[in-house]
Image (cartoon, rainbow, N blue to C red):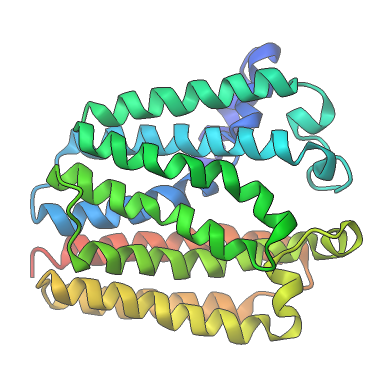
Length: 298
């Protein structure tokens, strides 16, 4: 449903606007859901039984904008690489639909508005988000110089857990629970991005771009299983520190079982299967959120 709504907004928009909506990946909501969810986990555990609806809405809007800015920066930096990969050749900057200058201006505008939106929650939340921006800009370069760029991406994506915690508490003095959620989100990112990277592994090999798919090769599923254990274990530890009830542990077990199913089932040599498994990772994130909420009432 979310994908259909997002795609509809893009396809029905005026042509001059459509390129920018595509640049921020509004037609592919999976990315911003994956970015947002660790923040919502944190809000649920930090707020107890009464998270503010306005806080949730503002965090959601900001997540779309920050992710949109990150995509625009990524596409500007990767425009020459994208032009050589079948899946990305039609991206707005690579295809020339959006210039490099306009792409950067669009990224800056989204990043700035996101900080203003988060400041409506509290200034501390906006400052934590701003501190993550250099990491967002650095990530596209990691694919060129670092043998495991996904590890860097995991650090970037999981920052939203700390942003969510600050939004709920008004303080950037993070307890161990917040860092447990950060770690859970980071290990989860290692899973879904490794699966995602298998879509392009042959192009990456030809072009010389580094990726998890090429790093792990035939051992990918063994690594994914390890990251799954570490992700669920980190969230489990965070929940225990927050003194949640029995429902948290029950739903978390279901989430772990579902993630295991995805890892076992995905065919890493089939790009469509990789994409489907990448999208399906959002259900794991929603189950974690359900566990965090339910744990407050049991």
